[in-house]
Image (tube, rainbow, N blue to C red; front, side, top):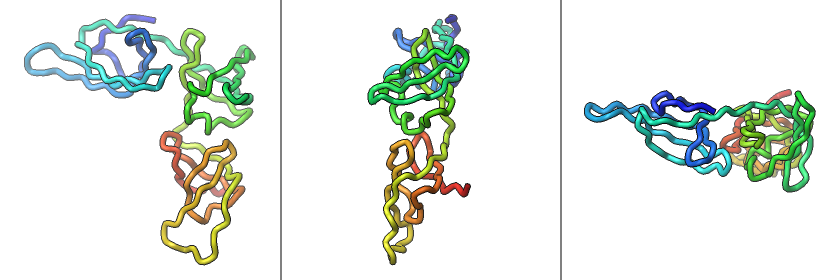
Length: 189
């Protein structure tokens, strides 16, 4: 952990604000004609997910925290916790469902993910912006239902329910936006 000036804060940094760890989502440096410059920040609480908008004078001291990206293999879920294994130390640890939120729908057993940790506590998991998942349940299209833009719901291998175009079938792979949980396109294997 180190102290930096608020004016040197940048996007994707991690700072301590009011005792909690935050990631910097947006940063705007403002230099008014009169008075001292300041920084407008949009922060995401890494424990609760809450968004905080705050302003600091550019010369204010801020605590920057060091987080580690730990390459970890996802093992299994037990209902409340998700179990991972550190790829370097082989230590196993649990991540509560509350930490993962909707990201739990993109975890596939046996795959490796970058898990963000600070002081031994898991704060987040890094995922690519889009992921490809296999459809495990899909309603059959009704013959004659050719309305332009017709959609239906399917369930993918991780349990996520997604609205897709009517032509998507069970067993097909689809690309999903991780942030919005929306269908992007069908992937031809």
